[in-house]
Length: 351
Image 1 (cartoon, rainbow, N blue to C red):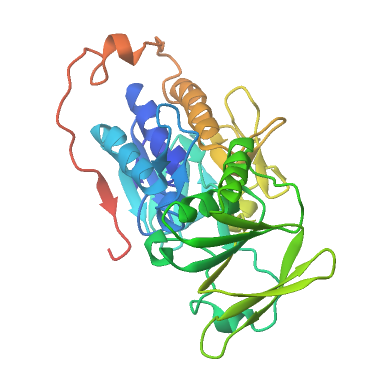
Image 2 (cartoon, rainbow, N blue to C red):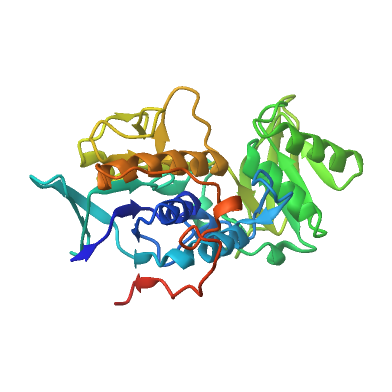
């Protein structure tokens, strides 16, 4: 049995930052994640994707953000159960939760923080004939190593932040990028839209709207895509890679069976401390929903901070928590000194 003050389900950026905020309150955390390494989507799906809305970093790669968060929280010695999915939650007469994974590993704590991002997910795929034949043969849904696209002809389909950001990034490493979207208007951040327009005006990105990819061709691997435009004009473009970025289809998985109030595949929480309808269980980051919710990493950081304040009251009901600024008090012991962090305890995939 693994015991902790807070069990964090999900080791993405929000879950990792929760360790730090809890550590400031002398609360111990243990994280559970189905992936074999911390970082969530930032590590598994797009470690080389630039992120632009982290305070203090005009631009940071998703993988580097994970490394920084791990470095920030390691002084509080978190434990990890990786490569295992949280399967069930039970609560005893003393209000202590037991979380059991799909491999039977049991964890106990008085507080649960669900920071599972989008839950389990898979990319949304376009309805194209023989699409599966070209997967990993020129068709990719996730960009893990952008260097393979350097000096290559790439068609990206989509109109959201991922499509815009990757178009910008690949254009800046000399990829020949064509961005195709079925509408003239894009759904991404205004700054990204403006950058794409600027690159288009510089002839560094070919933007085709409104249009859709209607056919993909090639004998052994992808050789070309057919683009159908609104005016019924059809254009065949020879390419090395086709990357449809239409987002992810989230699935809550076992979380949906835990008795939590669910709305549109997300967990409903209050906006005071992001607690769910079950006392002692919180949901933070992209997995929660409330009026005005924005699915941004920095919002998850904010939610984690407030959650930890309420978690302290649950864990220490008779102890007063005096809020202190780390800029004044330091971190270790709030005395301004710093000690060398121990390595986190990890229950790895192959244990």
